[in-house]
Length: 113
Length: 111
Image 1 (cartoon, each protein chain N blue to C red):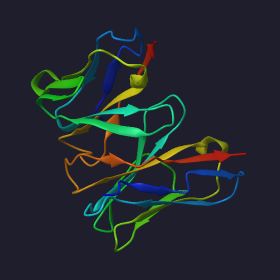
Image 2 (image 1 turned 180 degrees about the horizontal axis):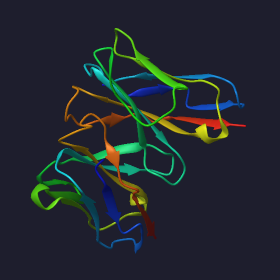
Image 3 (image 1 turned 180 degrees about the vertical axis):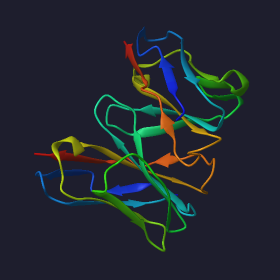
Image 4 (image 1 turned 135 degrees about the vertical axis):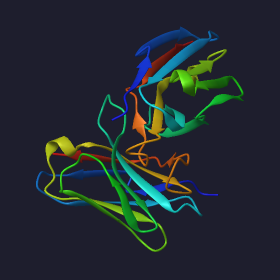
């Protein structure tokens, strides 16, 4: 079975632009979470979606938004990009909403110039 | 929120040596996972271990939930074990939907 897939793998943007990152969960998984990992730190939670509803939000500005589609895939959108948004963006999927092990994709590496 | 502390922050080993990585957490948890992040940034699931002991080849892990710590053992280390090891927890109360990661242990295994 395919694991969590993310696209694109790499992306270069300039300040002020907008970006959309995509994630397909493991087949059968209904929960998708997004994390941001800046260099030298552990991943930080951004959003969790379960059954197409937002179930959790981390401490990120409103420039960050996400949604989940009926097929449980998800998109993360970031508007008005800042240099500090440069990071590895990781998507994780799990079977359920509560207490389930999370499985991560390979991430999208976003660079802001 | 819950605090997760990992030690040591850095570890350098010769190939073949054994090591123990520690993860302390500040509140009760209902999920604890160990990950290995390789040099390409891939986060690889090692263990899902909210309590008890598990083994997978040269790796094993023990979580003592009542004492709020977990240990990851690596035996007969290989150069391919190099990378960052993260402990991540999902605590029982409050924000029980998100994994909180420690800062990781950077492991370097030299040939």
